[in-house]
Image 1 (tube, rainbow, N blue to C red):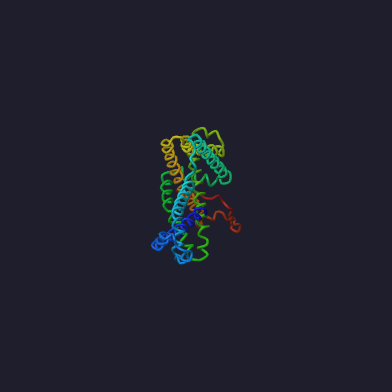
Image 2 (image 1 turned 90 degrees about the horizontal axis):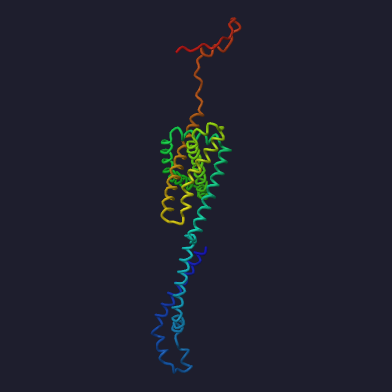
Amino acid sequence: MRGATIACALAMLTLAGTAGYASAQAGQPQAAPARTAPAQTSAQQPSVARSAADSACVAPSLPLTGSFIFAGLREALANARSWATPPALPPGQATVRAIKLTLGWSAFLLLLGLGVLVFAPEKLRRITEALSENPGKALVTGLIMDFATLPALAVLIILLAVTLLGILLIPFAIVAFLLIWMGVAALGLFAVAQVLGMAMMGPAQRSMSQRGAALGGLITGLVLLLAPWLAAAAMTWSNMPALVLRGIAVTITVVAVTAGLGAVFRATRSVGAGAYVPPATHTREELAWQTPTPVGGVVAAKRPAKAH
């Protein structure tokens, strides 16, 4: 709102200055005789044209108007620059601030991962198994999902734009889509962290319970994934090392999230395929042994073994 107010004020001042300058240029030939004839009577003074008087009043104020316009423009640019970039801090304070932010986000991800491990352990286990069975296929599937995210969002917006009610729901649909995508990505990231952590733990997890091994693997994996971010934050005081470490951290995180997305999709598809129960194909002869026949005096016998 402040930027819009400054822009409107600049536009109005520019128009006012332009109009005053044009009127001054138009009334300048008429204002000259009035300046060269100082010995006029009071009866002749009302005969000066109104436009010349206005021009004489506006012309001296043009430098003030121009300086005000340029001062407002400089102020608007300074405000926009201060909004776009954070205030500059000394290297030590910037490093401490970056470390605090990294530790805060790490704690948030750790708490979120513990919540998933407590409230949805079976789902996390299926995703972890799908990732462990074939990490290459999970990564390729995640790449396909990454490229299909924006087209899917565009299709959703187009479908909603068909009706008036759908147009009103477009902002909510975009927010819901992004929240769902972030939730799925976080779930996949936790699965990748658990696989990495359990691989790093090695034989030590054999002496733990299943829940303890899962918890230890999740914490160890998250520490491994967040360590590059913490190293980059600790090197904020130096530009080039911080930039290199930040690039490494971004690359590792993108690969982990992509593989996690593919694992989530493959686990969901495998669960959907496993939920299908085929119809019974037993023949009448195979089921006859289960039914006793008391009329004929034949009792139920054991199920005969199938001949191979």
